[in-house]
Image (tube, helix red, strand yellow):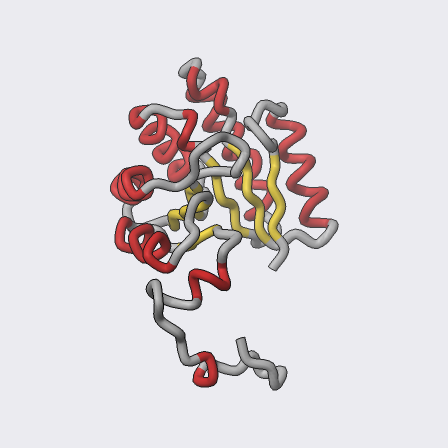
Length: 180
């Protein structure tokens, strides 16, 4: 799968530009779209604008059958703003809410993932991204409600709990003769 981000880093590009970026990314091979919520508009409580901004990207991606994840950049938001962002994302038809882009300091926290899961319920996914570096980190995010993990330490995470060595010989085949 090829995923790209729209509106990086703070979601401040116009809704029209985000929709154009989405359509262009799909034409160029993207199969999933991550969009950054307009953080400034959210903080200014321009909620109808934020909702329309999300809907524009969701409509552009869903019209082609592709997934949209709305990135909240949780390190920059209060719990109230995170709650509002999750509700707006869900109402706009997003497939996931995601903790962060990696641009701001701080990444996923158990608190934020649990809050996001409580707000969106089981209907949409929650992606914990940023700061997930170990098996234990990933496990705690999943227990808090994450359905996807974004991590640059994938190999370390797959090595299992600290000190264990997984049996990769029993890993399922990809069908290409290679195992993973």
